[in-house]
Structure formats: structure tokens, C-alpha cells
Length: 118
Picture 1 (tube, rainbow, N blue to C red):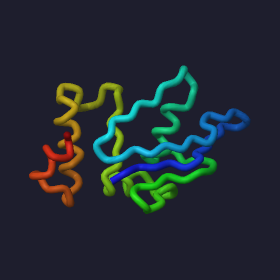
Picture 2 (picture 1 turned 45 degrees about the vertical axis):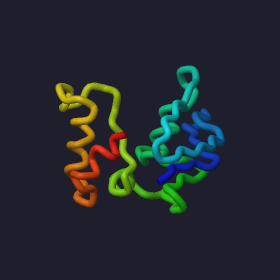
Picture 3 (picture 1 turned 90 degrees about the vertical axis):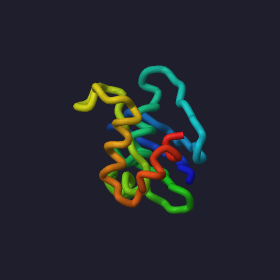
Picture 4 (picture 1 turned 45 degrees about the horizontal axis):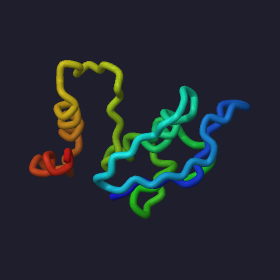
């Protein structure tokens, strides 16, 4: 599986938060976005997971365009968001928080948990 963006743009009024970012992340890769405060890192991530929609550009999972899919539909495809901020499960580990989310996704078998966490 891979996630790809093509020329994502997000504007808030006259302010351009993200201007034409294209990135591809393959399964198993760890990628970081570096930039100053206000550079558009979080906004880009939010567009990928479906929290906000881009003004233009596209988001793909494998070869399927998912730009207009809502966040809950992307979650069923395996694209999710675990916020850095404390949550109601703050006493759990990151792995335990992810496992709770997977419990809501019956298409992912328990035997696949460890494989997908790697």
C-alpha cells in the first residue's frame, strides 16, 4: 500500500497554508515533514487523513483517488490519525491505542496486528 499526494493546495481566505505539495509514502516507510511553525505540515497531514479537504490537488491510496472520501471511509481503508495530544486513553501505550482502533475494523484480523504494527 502507498499514499500519494499530487499538488495539494489549501487556502484559508487569502492565506495559502499549503502550496502544491506532492509526496509519496510506501508501505513500511517512515517519513517526516520538517518545517517552521505555520509551514503547512499539520495541514498536509490533515488533508491526507481526510480531516480537511484541499482546495485543489489529489490524494491517492495505491491507485485509487480518495480525495473526496470522508475520514471514516479512509479509516476503513487503513488510513488513520492518532493525535499527539492526550486522549481519553492516555494511560495506554501507542500500540494499545492503535489496537483499540483496529477492534472497530473487523476486516483486520487479530493475527495481522503485530505484522501491521511493524
